[in-house]
Amino acid sequence: MDNTAIASLVLAGLLLLLLAGGFWIALSLLTVGMVLMGLFSTAPMGSLVASTLWDSSWGWALTALPLFIWMGEILFRSNLSSNMFEGLAPWVNRLPGGLLHVNVLGCGIMAAVAGSSAVTCATIGRMSVPELQRQQYPLNLTIGTLAGSGTLGLLIPPSIIMIVYGVTAEVSVAKLFIAGIIPGILLMLFFSGYTALWSIVHRDRMPPPGPSMPLRQKLYHSRRLVPVALLIASIIGSIYGGLATPTEAATIGVMGALALSAITGSLTRETFVEGVMAAMRTSCMIAFIIACAACLTIAVAFVDIPRTLASWVDAFHLSRYALLGVLAILMLILGCFLEGISIIVLTSSVVLPMVQAAGIDLLWFGIYMTILIEAAQITPPVGFNLFVLQSITGKDILTVTRATMPYFFLLMAVLVLTVVFPQIVLIGPQIMR
Image (cartoon, one colour):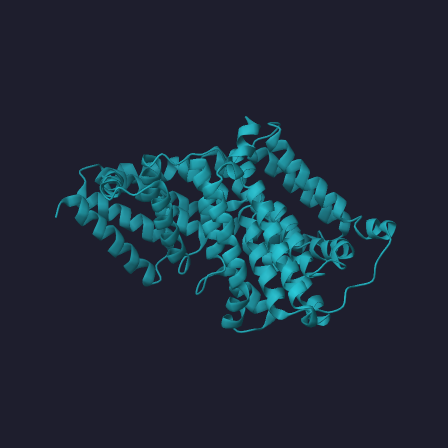
């Protein structure tokens, strides 16, 4: 067995041992990287680690990360969720599925201003679940629509996961944002379509439709959604039109979120400080993981693991579709134990060279990977959205998991569509050019 094979076994074994032992993810990555360099490379470890930690911490693209997180924290503490429920309900209460569509549409809107799956799910869920339970909507659909649609926070821009992937894979964050729009809308259509179909088939389990409402009254109830819609349009439009970088768009988003919160009266000294501190904690955690993952990437490159793995894959003569299938299984298995950002930084040093060697577009692969991580968010035992919904509904984790399964398979269906028709992902960035 050559040195590279032994190094690969040390990488996998030591990383699993540290993570299973409850060691911090960032320090686990750094430790494994230093061990690999110390044992299997003659490179100057100290200077390499120091320079890599520094170089990976000051990237311009990373500056958008704390700003988008802060914007989400501001709106999480505002009246946005109640305004959305009040504004969307009149438009959907006569459709098959009724107010369940508020979960889908509300999560789609919240995803466009939060960038986080857990924040999206919690913000909409804490408002919609009590109302849907009061009106006796089926619990499985209440949970399922929230769980599935909550994952849109990872795909619809601005997305924290996409920023991390863009920095790690050296892909344009702006193009990733635009590439996620059409798959995100497609997922919303699938979720709403399934909900409507289930409601038609099981009419006896659905509450009666709400009263019809004249157009003027619907518009009146939706008036508070206009500022949010303008905020979303200003963020995505400025990026798509080439008027602003993601960082500049994030600054616009923060200023708009502060203005909205101030106008609605939800911005106080206490909520402001809470939002800043929460954003700081999350941003520091992510930045620490990215910096330590960069050290592991350098170590893996010095030991020549990516080239060796690429040659192994080539020896098996796997087609692109077979390789994507293997990677999908790997990501879903990792998603059973790790959250999304950790999956990206853990796998990028090994997976991305293999993907490039197979001739797969890294921009397209970023959306493919994001959808897989979305699915991992509702996969036990560590699916974050499952625990969010468990705390909101008070139901056991098995009940929550069973309710989310149809929406997991809908995510897989959209994933297959993006493989068969890659233009679903690529058409937006191509027009953007």
